[in-house]
Amino acid sequence: MNNYLLPIAAVILGGLSILIWKPKELRSVKLLLAFSGAFLLGTTLTSLLPSVFANGNEHTSYWILAGIIIQILLEQLSKGAEHGHIHTSNNRIPLTLLGGLYLHAFIEGFPIHQHNDLLWAIVIHKLPIAMLLTLAIWQTNFNFSKKVMILIGFAIMTPLGSYLNFYTPILQPYSVHITALVVGVLLHISTTILFESTENHKFNISKLLVIVIGIGLSILKH
Image (cartoon, rainbow, N blue to C red; front, side):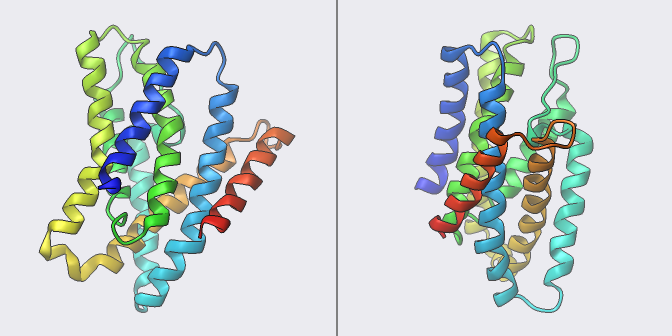
């Protein structure tokens, strides 16, 4: 049940924190984003990657590469929303941006049932993204109901992917391949977050510290 509730709770918490906190600058959110990227990268490398190679075959690497390509294609739609680049256009959020963000959230939920470590990495990843998405939505001219519906849609995508993968018999023989695909997606997104957490290609001490803590905690959690 946590596989479904925790990702939803992360989005709710992220959204409410923005509405209550109402930050005037995003330094804290960016630090949380850097932490989430580090934790996600550490979990992918220490938990998912060894698993797919241990249980896969000689084609496993190709599925990982396919996942990287899929994430690159998704970012053509989302314009980088998965790693914090969420911008409104004429007080609206483009449908392509939401589509890419939703698809990413849907795909990353697929292996959660088999990898509990990934669940927590996704939850931590969703917090800053939900915060930034809420901030962007509340800058639009959408009515309140539409704003809430967008957040609900984002919240349920990961549990929906997890449910579909677990309860669709035709997918069961391909669980390792699907996990390898998601590894590629997560490797791309997590490293992009870390690279983009720099300013002028230099790490400041605060971001370096949260990245080290994020990777360290992912290792301890594993």
